[in-house]
Each structure stands twice: as C-alpha cells, then as structure tokens.
Image (cartoon, rainbow, N blue to C red; front, side, top):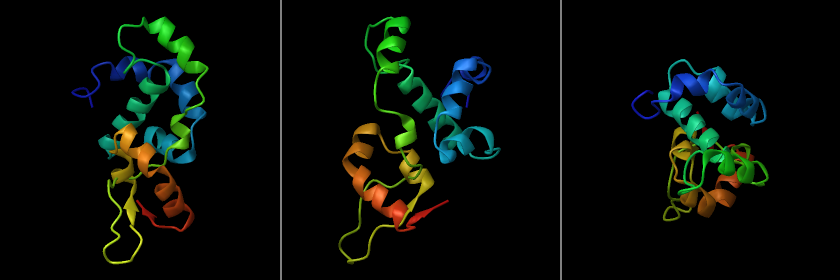
Length: 129
C-alpha cells in the first residue's frame, strides 16, 4: 500500500478520509473498513478519495483550491461500482460477468464509457466478488 500511496498513514488517520468514506456506497465502505486482504480495493478507495478531494489530477492548482472546487462537484466515487473488466464480450451473445476487482481497476475514462453496462450488470446480478 505504501508503494502506491506513501501518504497512506496520514490519510488513514485523517478525519476527512473517514467522513468521505461514510458518505460512500456500502461496497466502497467495505473496501475501507471490512477488507483485511485485498490491497487493490483499499488502494482504489484511496484513489477515489484523492480524486474526490481534488488531491490528484488537478494540475498546478493548490491543494486548498482543488478541495473547494471538488467539494462542489456532483461526481462522487459513490456513483462507481466496484469491479474490474474493460470490455463487454458480445461475441457469444452472453452478457459480460464482471468482478469487483475488474471494475475497481478501470481508469475513470474507461469506467465512464462502460458505466451504463456496469449499472445494468449490477441490476442483473452479473457482478461477482
């Protein structure tokens, strides 16, 4: 975890992180609080926290400016579903069965492109642990 997030200990101990986690879907909360073995999901939760708080991907803006602008944003990590696949197999005529790890590993632009398919998979029970 520290290789990907050297600031992990500070984030884990921060009130902002725990407030953010409480505002997320149950799946994402489970990545944080009920996940002793899957570092990938925990790391993804931190990625989402940093993105929501404006701590990554904001160029040269100051941390404070990014926090303020991102708090007003409507996009939340809670809108994401935890899974991990980047394509939908249409060749066999069968809908794609996703895993949480596949969805969690998707880059944001890829997730945005596949969001409606992932939502449909969740509704149809095609998302596996």
